[in-house]
Image 1: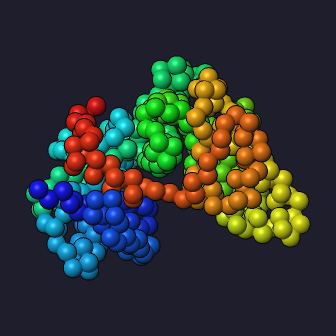
Image 2: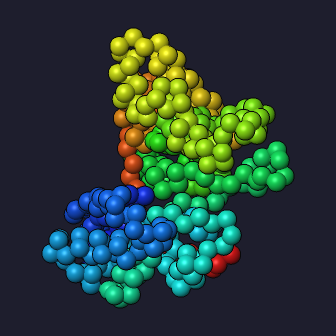
Length: 360
């Protein structure tokens, strides 16, 4: 029996669609399909981009000398159109309906199109389509849901796909399984989150608006002062939202959003840049400490991942604060495409079950 599986991975962003072809665990090809602002401006909403993005994906498949029917499965980045368990869900009509007719408060994003693209390709190929470790995976303990204000419950919001993939890799390298380990993992990119992984579950996290600032996001700021600023009359609702996500963090202090630029400023003797970088490492360390407490300080390791983890200067700064808690492992970059492919492969091989989506 042929145990070779070809899998197409689909992971859209706001201005691009990442695609990759895997044969079992081997990546055969990957490409970022860039979409111009002019092309995207033709569509009133993200969901209206489906035919445009579908055509781009199909053109990519043809460029590789392949047909849709050559694939054994399709796997997409699941969006926030529902609350999910971790792992795989086979795309069904209820999931499609939840995207096309979203519940109040659910805002369509680029990842929603990934599910719809995978679903259409699945029908054409007669092969299954999945989402895996969706954006809105929720494994939180109930005690973690209270924020201090009844009207604002805490919600699961971590970089689930990448952190779980990295945790699996670190556990395997140690000759163990993710489900047997306790890790605190900080994903450091445009947004920064720190999560507590307890025996294979993300039981709590410091989301990107609850803790440290990041290159473009303000993180947690003093609540009373924030309320005063919101009602000061100086800013509109949209301006405040942009200030918190887009013009906050490092951008607010230094006017740049790339840590390479910050490090260049530090090397040139810019004391303000050094202070901001020190504060970023300091705040990440605080978040790691809080998640270590959630795990009763019974840690098998601390993992630093994401794009900023490529910086030895910065990871060294964080390590100095937290290395007495547990061994610190640095895994730079993001492994979303690989994580999606491996998740689908485990399902195809029968090593992992599939969740059934039922609309809320």
